[in-house]
Length: 186
Image (tube, rainbow, N blue to C red; front, side):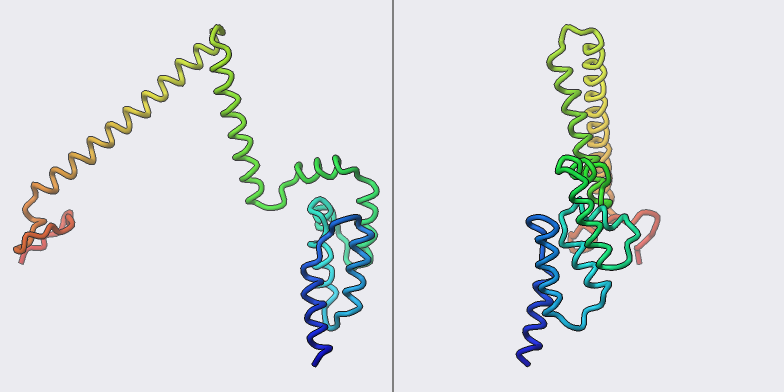
């Protein structure tokens, strides 16, 4: 029973192990834990190993066609020695790992673009192209306000016509929701 508890503890530690230093240090810790664990498939061990690595190395291993854990060890060591931290960062930045990360990067890029446009408008007042941009921006802002005003009037008109409609009132003075096109009188 104690060995079962030890096996579960080692399995948990293996699933939570993360690379903090070099690949060689991570690999040696990983191998120590493997020796204490029984009954785990090679594919699960491979997954634990890959997802414990730093994100850039995860990306490299996941994109490879490596099939065994030993090949993962070799590729991770080779990738670490081949790339500097800057190169790993650039690789990580160039390929979003998830759809969410891709959308996040798009939002950040869009925010930078909008901020850059606003700064250009504010700092280059003497430039004629910038003045044109300012006029277009003001016209767009005014058009948005007009649409908001029109929508507000339409909503107010609908509320007034519903309140005037006696078919929505019951005998107890309660206002029932409008039923368009349906006669509910008995």
